[in-house]
Image (cartoon, rainbow, N blue to C red; front, side):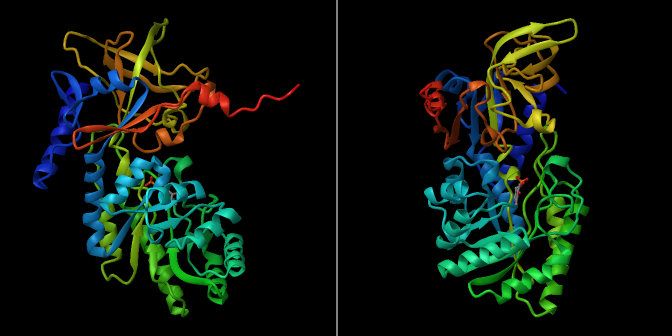
Length: 441
Ligand SMILES: Cc1ncc(COP(=O)(O)O)c(C=O)c1O
């Protein structure tokens, strides 16, 4: 299917979901071949903000949030946005305004949330290596829940809470040796990974919590990986954590909350719409009796689809084997293709019907063979200075940026109520240089 048709199909599917739910038109669509979002021509955004620029659609975020909320509400489940997937202050603020709490993995992410007035009682702090200052700060802010990832970390939390004489809710992140059937680098649920407390240590850990004077036992947490689609993985994860919680209750321990993590999968090829069917089925089967207060920590599924990266072709280059489009975005802006071999759909900003199709490698200017955004892509013949849209970049896109090759980060623009809002200025090179201190040799 050619790219234009695919995008129209994508848009039409979106439209029908929204029409059913009586919401306004959402998603990326085309008018006279040109890419639009809400009422705005993306060409105008390029003219105004330049490239590379990330663009996010507020309506797509709202749509994915409400789809999940519809599943979680009947189960009394709360949604906490995993800030690691996109830590832009405007994005956090918007998702919080929809009714989501936050899941953070560092003091930096926690401070981001507080800066945009996410309430501490809506914040979960996960992460395998929380340092003393981070734990102390989180306890002092009275956040909802600290997830302890090892007996050693639990002991540190106990000591810190005792020293500052402040009570904190602690959940144990467990590792129940689950194969998440996902990419190795985003798999976190098996016993070879650094995450969570293994089954044999859980009772001991719960005992420590119970004996500590400033720790309130909150429950259990689990997160087995990202890009999960498989019903069996969800079912196994939820059943195992529930059974463990019931075992602990039988031993007389208080286990009221189950934090089920995130990881709900997104289709980067844009062939299938985001859906939470297998998640919903497994949740309803395992938790139909509502014996626990549930929470989930999605990142990718809330924000990935909403974002695109606009990038301009610096020049074209052909060899005996390849046609390259050398673009002004690179692995420092979007590292997913390099790091995970991820494939993002790539679209021209304007479809020109008289152009034939050609196979391209879309690559950045960074001096690494691994610096690519797409390999062997069929695109319409594309010329210097024309713009491409790399789709589904809202999650683990800009947030994973670096300044490799002394390259500034991209701008980020949010589309809300048919208006554009600049969420992050493009860095400039002087700002980067100013961080270094020149020694007095
Ligand atoms: C503890 C925890 N919760 C939630 C998430 C969010 O995962 P995703 O963005 O796939 O929903 C992650 C990501 O790896 C995580 O480590």
